[in-house]
Length: 103
Length: 258
Image (cartoon, rainbow over all chains, first blue to last red; front, side):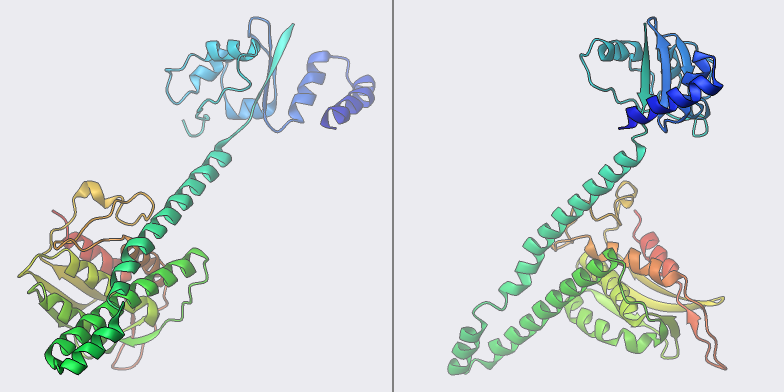
């Protein structure tokens, strides 16, 4: 249902007002209340929403690097965990992060 | 090709899980309290009719007299525990009645003094209630007596034979401080953090193996919280003052440090 709504929004608003895919993606991401980050195949960050920016203030270019900067302890190998997600070995990974304000 | 990652904040879920775990642990602990402590005094009542009948037929009034004292203690203990359980349950549901009013401390603690004097005597503990007849406080009577009863009970439990317990009152500035001082075994600083928590605390036994449930002090903490925000009222030549329940407790805890 949620997916249908997003597509509908895409059809109506994107064609009328947007001509840039990155901007459109950003708008869609910003409509999501969770932190949303897109990357390329090398896990370099290509887009993120405002919630991500507000919560994880950083200039990191790689998602693993970004998350590692906010880990409560840095013992965990985030890149390895992400790779397990990509390879479908894990459904989800739980990390304990500190946001910028609390850090 | 690329990926999109969603990072969901689980903080609230984890906090609720922790609260649930704590509630569950508290429930388990309550079952343990009921299982151990409620059974013990109630055993005193088992077969009481036959015992009384036997002693009457035997005309052994001395033993009968001892039996009544023993029963009185068991009944008080049972009543104390049930009262604590009821108050705790009400507090958990946030429906604990709170009706503050002027209380004469001496009169309000008279029954507690009478009962614990007998209990203390069995351990040869000198129990002194040195309270002025004029001292009045503004607090909820039920909460007040529950606090004093639990603090004195705790003091008796953890004071060795031939020890000393003093309950005194002192007017400080605009407050009345009621102190429960004892020469007891005290508590290690490392155990202090769990002193008021029902879920994480391990039961401590008294100097004669008395079981410590932890319910009493947990209840005291909640009742102290309840009575802290009382509004002082005054009266000519006989000033009603809010009892400094926080100080009442802190003073007691401090005396128990080791």
